Amino acid sequence: MNEPVLLKNSFVIAFVALMQVVAPAIVAVGSLYLVIFAYGIPAEDYFHVMALVVALLTIFLPHPPRNGNAQIFSGPMPLAIGVIIRWSVILSLLLAIGYVVKFTEEYSRRVVLTWAIVTPALLILVTLALHEVMRRLLCDPSNARRVVFAGYNEGSLALARQLTRSSEFCMTVAGFFDDRSEDRLEMDKGSRLIGKLVDLATFVNTNNVQVIFVALPIRHMQRVTHLLDDLRDTTASIYYVPDIFVFDLIQARSGAINGIPVIAMCETPFYGFRGIAKRLTDIAISAFVLLMAMPLLVAIGLAVRLDSKGPTIFRQRRYGLNGEEIIVYKFRTMNVLEDGAQVTQASKDDARTTRVGRVLRRYSLDELPQLFNVLQGRMSLVGPRPHAIAHNEMYRKLIKGYMVRHKVLPGITGWAQVNGLRGETRTLEQMEARVRYDLEYLRNWSIFLDLRILARTAFSVLTDTRAF
Image 1 (cartoon, helix red, strand yellow):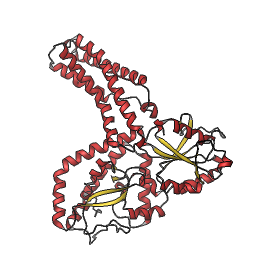
Image 2 (cartoon, rainbow, N blue to C red):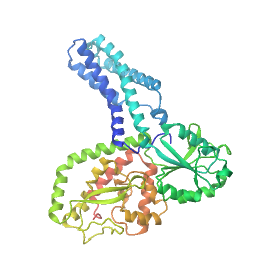
Image 3 (cartoon, rainbow, N blue to C red):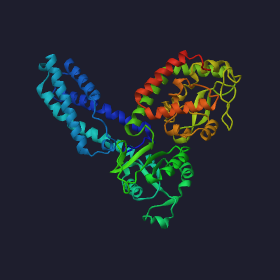
Image 4 (spheres, rainbow, N blue to C red):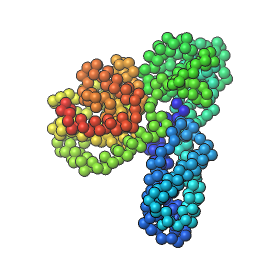
């Protein structure tokens, strides 16, 4: 909860995060060669070996666990102390390696001592600079999420004040919903009563509200349950704020904002550095695959163009992150371009499918252009598969919690697809099963789960004879 959610500038943030990993190695190795040059000593092979070992240690030496805002918004002194401690560990490991291999006599002592003293100062400067750049990116006003409160009381008012005063939480308070009137509530000056609780879901859907804090007393849990049911058709993150001014409630799995406990009830898994790690993985893998597959993309494009009339790339409107409309790219595999209020799902032996289209759909090659969607930040490699808007509007009314799957970027492949729910969904039960897998993915996400899904996808593409 304390970490900002990655909404805007994801490519730049991912690049800065990558630089935070590799820049210390560049500084350490660069300063070594500068000191060697300054003393006029030849850069012999053993110095190259030392530079390589230093680079590997600097990059791969594990960092202490990151701790939300304490990590992102910590002051310069803790960061500087952390750099010095980490540098001391690296020097100790270098000395231990040199002692074991009996190679220390080859190195100039004045070079090593000068380098050991100068480098941490440079590392501190670079670390503080990159940290400030990251902080500014994450606290950019365009990255702020709009917040409303369900219930007006001392707890919700105190939390609203904290969010308003502290820009690092990247939240803007729009107002409160409560069934009582302003006169009865005796509202604080500057607080805004937007409407009654029954109006909350409609307001959230029509006013780009991204976070809801439910601050109703626990004795009104039935009202909380009904309210949550109404909010299932939104993509907003939902937190429960215990009324600690009435009940002394501290639960082990609750979070806190400056001492005020909150309980995450519905949140994206990609907050803080988890979101950055997800984005870095998407960029690295999709860029590599596109580079390697470029000749294949050109060949498929020519084959589609020569096989039948129509555009090479099929563009269809779908729902992306937070239910916002996006354009998804695919190689055209049919003679029709459906993207309206009625979209017929593809079926086996579908007469609309072209000759080339059958091959592309069999091996999921028609999905390759979506790698460009991934680089654009509209999709991810792994996530709930995006459905046509017409299907979304139908199923969100039939399946409880359907829109929650849009709390993350849609994926080229997903947990549902590798568990046998690839392709056409003929029945409501099949779509319900797909949604269950999508929500399970949100609950259990990790980088390793993404890699596992990608590996299973590659295997199923080659072996799944049910694809069409």
